[in-house]
Length: 255
Image (tube, rainbow, N blue to C red; front, side, top):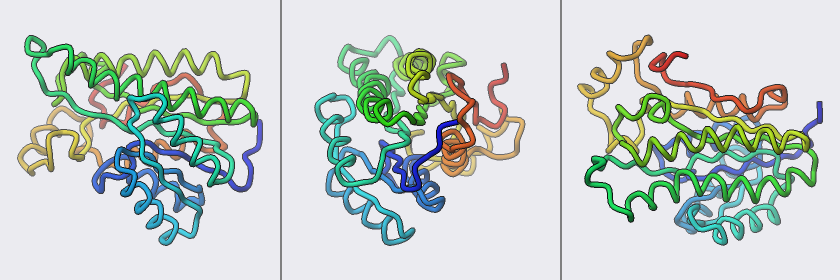
């Protein structure tokens, strides 16, 4: 088992939204002592969020704005974060967009938008972070897929989203296979219904009850549920887990 450096950094994409999985994740990881790299679209908000994290948890943190669907933008952001922070040991690809458009109304622009952010963005960030991890001989990468990929939709988002998130699972498995020789693990998390704004805004109590009927637990998920799963998969103890998809979905999809 390759030991982690004492000072280690986790980069999280899509980490600014107050009610999002990414924001919950950086709070959770910073509380565990991880130094934090924040990536999101708005550069100023990334930097402000990083400042808040550093002040709240006493860790190092830096932010850099990037459009994850643009490879040059992602590479520049990770370059900047790497220069400002301790060794990059972990990457959590959380950035994503929803797409409730019915299939027969999906045009090329919507298809490209959703796959560009939800699949290409995961590849671009992974490709850049893996360069540094391979050089250093250790790394943890976690990608966010969705139960929508496994069930063929049936959620708020429809076909382009499901296709992109299914692609994330394939990308996770293939990169796990190729990067394993460098002591890099790659895993995916497949959330079920989570109370974030990506599901069309704040969920009403009625909508929460409706979603819970399909679950084997008595509530829908919170961003913290996913953050805790990410924290486990990027931990030093999770080094024997790679190429897997962890369903954090209240039992919605069993296989």
